[in-house]
Amino acid sequence: DAGVIQSPRHEVTEMGQEVTLRCKPISGHDYLFWYRQTMMRGLELLIYFNNNVPIDDSGMPEDRFSAKMPNASFSTLKIQPSEPRDSAVYFCASSLRGNRQGRTEAFFGQGTRLTVV
Amino acid sequence: RKEVEQDPGPFNVPEGATVAFNCTYSNSASQSFFWYRQDCRKEPKLLMSVYSSGNEDGRFTAQLNRASQYISLLIRDSKLSDSATYLCVVIPPGGYNKLIFGAGTRLAVHP
Image 1 (cartoon, rainbow over the protein chains, first blue to last red):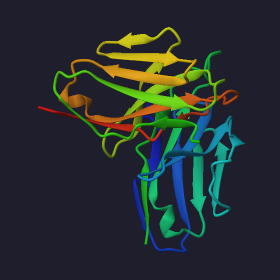
Image 2 (image 1 turned 180 degrees about the horizontal axis):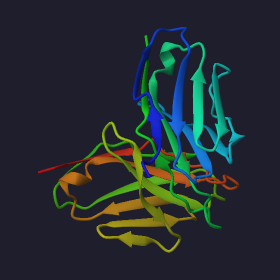
Image 3 (image 1 turned 90 degrees about the vertical axis):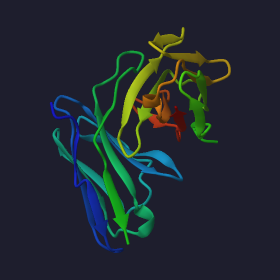
Image 4 (image 1 turned 45 degrees about the vertical axis):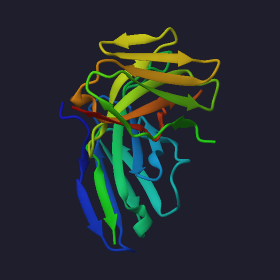
């Protein structure tokens, strides 16, 4: 398996534009996560899905952010309109359901480095 | 209070040194704990799980202290290749795979 695949790897956009980040999880994984990483705030969980259904979106910062998972092999994170403070590395990760103790490993994509100017 | 807190470092140590990182978590009912490693400009990767009785993987030892709500990672005989950021990770109760990351502790091993 190729692992979690994210695109694009880098995105530079102007303030106010719509940005769409894409993720293909590892085949067979039933959990998908979107994280944002900045120097100031570290890795923040934005939203996660189980079997394509959003379970917890409490980390989504504002209504400008939305995420979808139309099927088991694809998810998008959209920012509309984008702002300079959205500049960060956005990671997608996927995992299998954990065991009874919750033990599971999350596999991360290489991330999308977003710069909003 | 943050759910998971770590000393950001950096820890600058010579090769061969022993170094320890601590991490505290706020929810006493949390059940699952991990250490992830992140190299510069790369994605995080699982280093090891942390078990209640403590566990070892080669030069790495992880400990859990539930009473004090902290987790530790000990690295013995540091190598240059250990230079990275070490992320403490907790799954809160009812979290269903929901991984909460600490901000990370940066380690720099020098010759």
